[in-house]
Image (cartoon, rainbow, N blue to C red; front, side, top):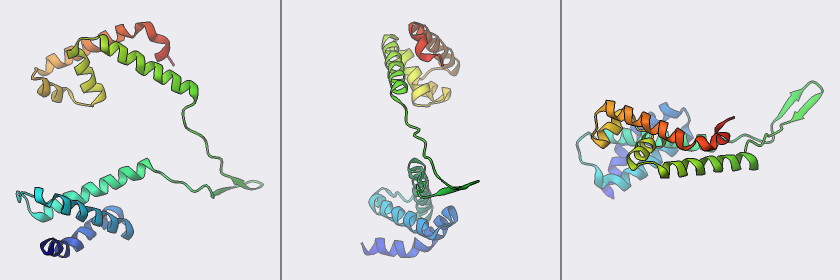
Length: 178
């Protein structure tokens, strides 16, 4: 624990300055650095010494910053007390409900069910390629590497899989036309 405390003392200023440059907020920078050192403490046994400790710490601080931004985007907040000045005084802010309605939820569910059913009818290699590309977001190159196939073969097989999926879904066109 004394060795860890010595590492914190040695690197906390550098980590804070780096985090502050990323967020331009003292409080956020402090939170990011605290989170980073918690992660360092938990993963210190994984540090192999292949790079300098400072480099490893920068990477962890960067990941903490990116994670904080992801959390921020998921939880955007806006005050409900804000009012807008209007021509005849102030207007209360109207908050639009952007949630899907029952009809949209039913159509989305029917689409998902139709796609899952169609995928279930397809050969496994076609299903795997469609899922790898369209669900997992893998590139053609990554799929080629994962399946040990030439790039051209992946492209042509993926195209055939799309055509087969379209044919499978042809009986459900009303779900996909908008």
